[in-house]
Length: 490
Image 1 (cartoon, rainbow, N blue to C red):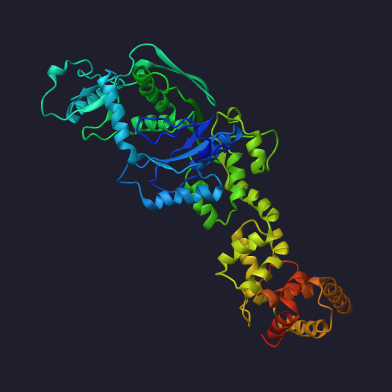
Image 2 (spheres, rainbow, N blue to C red; image 1 turned 90 degrees about the horizontal axis):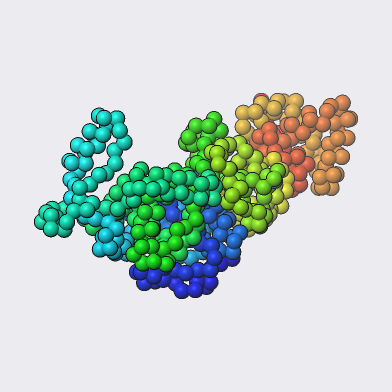
């Protein structure tokens, strides 16, 4: 695994690219909202590709949209990535802080003739766009300022810097996921790289940051395919200006994620922020990791895949070209598996947070109970719900179904069970043998005893095995709860 210590020469200066050993990937979210599930998968694939090749995985926060970028969103992104175990190998780069460097490159391109001042006004552009729409033809920038003599530049008028896109030939990208993709260069317009106020555009900033960070492989959603061709214009212009050091990155454009119905993924499909899968749905990070891994990538018939196996097996070329379909129920099934596999003390700590915190004795009891609790639970919420009976205060509040079970006859049985069990050895085997014998003596099925007993002990009609419940609660608490209910009448 590469880290900052593997850096050959870290480029802290404005014009020096970081040179690292081998593969360098990056995840570059915009902090305008939560870390959504598609972004988390993109980050995961970048992390896995770097790990598989012994390279470096970097983070960049693309916070140039100052009006929409927020500190809470930035913290949510870092929180989500760290929860999944795919935080960056080095300190994150913040794009806005590098604006001067981006502008420097724009001026280099301008001075070398690979970009130009454009004085077209917004009104002129709007009129040309309207004319193209009226004539039903694509609108592309055809600026008369592209090759204008500097002597014709109007004094005191605002201008932007546009890149000079090639007007003939074609560009082909050998995409590692999509395969070869070719675009005719005439389709690429002279887009703005520096605004009239001197601030860089996203298209320029991305290229400069990738170069300066030493990124070798750009792995991102396939909605960025068109951007790749536009960004290559800047890269190749800088190759002409500065020569070596501005190599084309390798591109891998991952298909987007759709809902189970094939429609664009949305909240109605269960698409939430990564923090919501943890906090609201009670999922474990290893389950989300495994499920995201399997969204569009596979290794034979393997479904449950460890982090170590994922690193060993991951090949970007095995990512499917078609959109993956998000299935919340399948994710929850993955989580049930990982709940059952998880360490009991770890689960107890997570569940304790959902129970409002427990003292040392309560946490020890919850840990002891976890083997019987987790076999029935699909998530931390169900674990917490199933564990609440352990810490309920007497007299127990019964839910509607439990209260319905406790008829006068059932309460009489509870009294008889309390008298019988008080003298028994307090083990699951001994308690089970005693109640089975009592049921036979009375000509009843064991369920006729277990159902009211469960209601009295837990206040519900669902719980772990009733003999496990008795042992977990202990002799004194169990008998006290049973006697509470036996003493009441309907």
